[in-house]
Image (cartoon, rainbow, N blue to C red; front, side, top):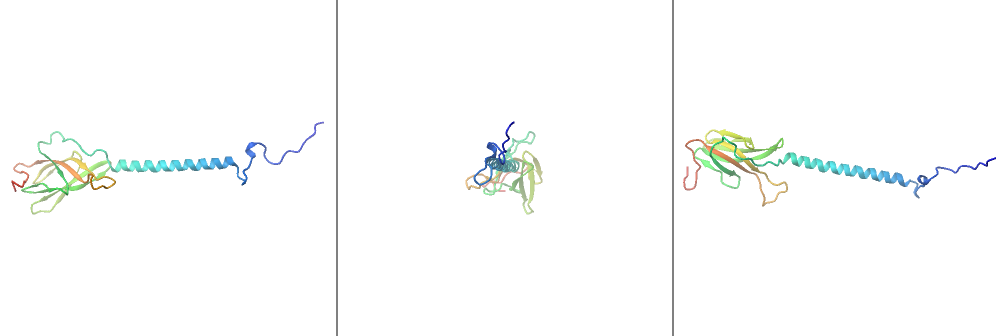
Length: 176
């Protein structure tokens, strides 16, 4: 007959080895791996979210060519730090810019002599007709940098203006 021996207590094999603190090493490694993976996924999601937000709110296209059929006119930069161009009928100034639906929208402010200022908004390449001035086309925007530095860019708008017949820009040697 075969002699039967009693079975050892507990599990048998290398997986059964417990750490000195009573927690098995394989479970601890799995938990660390899971938390590391969760951390990497969270960091990637944050980076992708921030990158997508920047891409959407800071469109890459900041200038266009003068559209065909606009006519001959003057290309000028409008900025708060330079004198606004004037005609005998009024003054044209920048009204700022903003982004909307991944497009830049620039604005100009027309102040007729003795009247109230009116702000006109337009997309890049869009033309508008302003009574008493002529046709204004938005050609470029120069938004301020994300990290503000005193030496770089900031809120400049470049427009193409075709003046109404009989108008000209006022100059120091030719005041209106």
